[in-house]
Image (cartoon, rainbow, N blue to C red):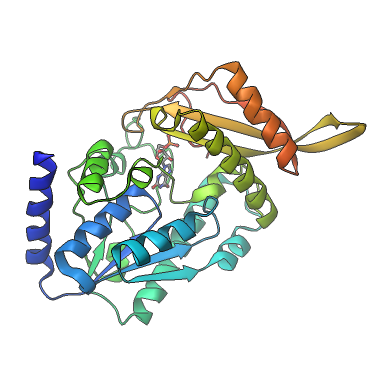
Length: 319
Ligand code: XMP
């Protein structure tokens, strides 16, 4: 694409001018935005860039391994992976309030990131995959004058505290344009087309207390749901699809036994930019197949429901 090729060249030049011979550190989330930002910056300044991926234990199945493969094997970009799983799960123990969960994860993420940056001998610049809608939403999120609907992770906070200048090469772009830039940079379609994933990860898809066990249960259900969506050829028609593990147990029957296990909710929406969303109208046969698989294959879940709420009035994530 001519436009994106030109954008790429312009940004590479700008990044070189801005950074000079400085050191840049980039926080990877596993998502498309931070990955595209990192690849673009690496093209501009090579090994002056180091990427840091904090594994907070709230990732989707195999997510960390996918990022490691992509950066190390495919692009040869210096990558540090920090295993912070224990700190996050211990810090979340007993917490059920959505905003407190978000704030703890955001704060702890900054602490881990700062420690790692110090270990690397510091850096002059912090790179972020901030998009245009992030810039707008952090000013007034989801409408409503100056009402904070959700405290967003990964915008703000970090740069001031770390006393670093920001490199944000995607600040003028919308999500679809970032994907186009990703393709222009040779990222493969499976990665470029990935659904967005929130910074606080699975924690905001487990209403109530987040435990290791509940994370593991949710990861399995979520992976089955997404596998079925891919197999049905529906993945690219959907903005975001994921499972939510509810803090509610219901009675069921399996074979000759009574079960008493958790409810899993499935969410799938279409959207242009995440600001508004419509539910994805799966056919009933598809949903019942997913439900059957989840109940048969995931211990701890015995009931599956589908979320029919658009945004507004709902939000995409449940917390
Ligand atoms: P909501 O739930 O507010 O989500 O309708 C809109 C979009 O934003 C994603 N989201 C986040 N992304 N950090 C992120 O990077 C966050 O803290 C966060 N919270 C929500 C959500 O997945 C959806 O795509």
